[in-house]
Structure formats: C-alpha cells, structure tokens
Amino acid sequence: MTNRSRYLFIFNPAADKGRASRKSAWLEALVTESQESVMVRTTHAGHAGVIARAEHRQRTSIISCGGDGTLHEVVNAVAGEGCTVGILPFGSGNDFIKTLNPARRQRRGISHFFNSGSREVDLGRVAFANSDNRFFINSLGIGFTGRVAKSVKGAPWLKGELAYLYALLTVLAGYSAPKMKITITLENSVLELDEPVFAFSVSNGKVEGGKFRIAPQAEITDGLLDVCILKGITKLEFFPYVFKYLNGTQISDPKVIYCKAKAVDVTLTEPDVMHMDGEVYDDIQGRVAISVVPNGITMLCDLSEDSEPKNA
Ligand SMILES: Nc1ncnc2c1ncn2[C@@H]1O[C@H](COP(=O)(O)OP(=O)(O)OP(=O)(O)O)[C@@H](O)[C@H]1O
Image (cartoon, rainbow, N blue to C red; front, side):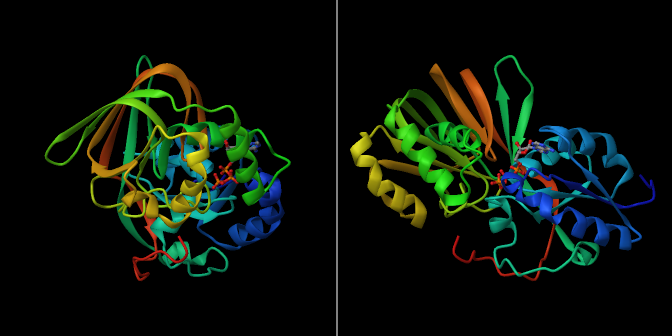
C-alpha cells in the first residue's frame, strides 16, 4: 500500500448480496490509474472497520465502497479523527446517500471524489449498559425494524424488495409489540412513554430499508435526531402503515409519535434486536441511551446538489 495515497477506497465485494464483486476489476483499474488512491478489499464482516482504523491517519479521505453496513463500519472507525469519508454506493439499499446527495446525479468513475466539496453532518451515538459506544449515521431501530434487518441478513438468497417483503411477513407472523420505557429529550421539554411500541426508530437520514421514508423531515445538519414511534397496534392494523411508511405520511397518523430530539433513552423489559444502519445488534437488554453528535463527521459530497430528495 502506498503511504502517499491520500484516498483509500475500502471495497466490500459482499455488498448487494455479492453483486458488488462484479465491480472489483473496474474499480481497481480506476484506482490504479489515479496517482492519489489505493484500494483494499474486505475479506470478512467487520474488516472495513479494521482497515479504516489502521489507515485513517495516513489518508485524507476514506471512500466506503459498499452499502450502509460498510459505511457504518468506516464511520465507527474514524468518527472524531479528522478524516473525511466518501461513499461509492455499491450496496442494496444505500440509504444514507439518499439524504446526503438527494439529487443522486449519476457519477461515472471516481474522479469526482478528488474535486469534491465536503460538509460536516450529525451522527447518532448509542451507549449500551456495560459496553462501548457505537455511532450510526443513517438510522437505528429497536424491535420490529431490528428484527426485519436480521431477517433480511438471514435470507441471502432473496434480493432487493423481495427480501424486505419476506422479512416483513416473517417477522410480523410471530410479533407482538414489546413494552418499552422511553424518555425523549426534545429541544425544550421531555416526553415520557411507558407502553407497548410496535415500531421504534431514531434517524439522522430520511430513508431506511431502501424505500421507507422513516423520517421524512430529518436533516443531517440540524443537530437533532428524528424519532418515529408507532404505538402498540395489532398485526391486522399494521398493513396500511406499510404504505404510510413508504410515503412518509405515517408522521401525521394519531398512532404515531414523530418528533425531533437531542437524546432518547429506552429501557427494554425483554431482550430484543436492534439495527444501526441496517447492521444487526442482537440480544440488546436493559437501557439504551441514544444521543446526537452534532457535526460528528465530515462527508465528501457535491455541494451544488439541491436539498430535496428524488423519490425518497
Ligand atoms: N468480504 C466480506 N465477506 C462477507 N461479508 C462482508 C465482507 N466485507 C464486509 N462484509 C459484511 O457485508 C455486510 C453487507 O454490507 P453492506 O451493508 O455494505 O451491503 P448491503 O447490505 O448490500 O447494503 P445496504 O445496507 O445499503 O442495503 C456487512 O454486514 C459487512 O460487515
């Protein structure tokens, strides 16, 4: 690896259920052509974080070449370390870039990274009882969406929307809304809940699961996280909400609490599944403390793009 290379491309060939591997030779050729870049392929889950942690001091920028899971690993490795992060979206969902670069201008090659603008964006931070802090850049879900993320990962033979449909129906079949004790610190007040919650999410980005507008009013630079809580409804009542979440209209539903928060504390009565940026954290127990880190990381992005997402 050349130490002078300013741009490190971390490439996950397993992204998009292995289809990203088809881009390996193409990316390698472009990186080799560039005087300023070097590329490393991951060999296993977690490897992107290991590479980023080992390399970030020698690089100006790290480009995450994969989906939101690869980005999650890179962000957790370099947050607060002064290294900028770019995204080459090779994943299935690529949700965070839909909020970061909403115009989604088609980019060919990698040269745009070398003249790119950058901006600081917020991060979410999670402190678990008896464990380290973790960051999320796009979204976090506990309960229903955590279990859906786990089911999607467990069905590698299904791609794209089919995988989400399969996961949604499988999880729904055995689901009843878990009880959660939640304290939401709003800008000027505190909101307390202690009841069954069907779906719980805290978001920095607007989109989750490829197409679901889980937090349509989220802004990545407002120093706040968007909380979306669907109260304890029955399974049969759930189906209309699938369409509401796809359109982002759930936020005006009377069974949904949607607000902007500085921090959220959740206490679970039973162990449950959580996802952060689509990565599964299993067997989460007790208290989970979530807070915003304003301007937590600097992202490479095209500053000329407009601010409203297309089809997001
Ligand atoms: N070489 C590898 N072999 C197997 N798994 C890997 C490898 N490198 C990374 N991973 C894991 O692959 C998983 C999927 O990666 P990623 O989330 O980036 O793609 P995706 O799921 O297609 O994208 P998205 O989350 O945007 O839908 C992550 O959990 C990551 O840790």
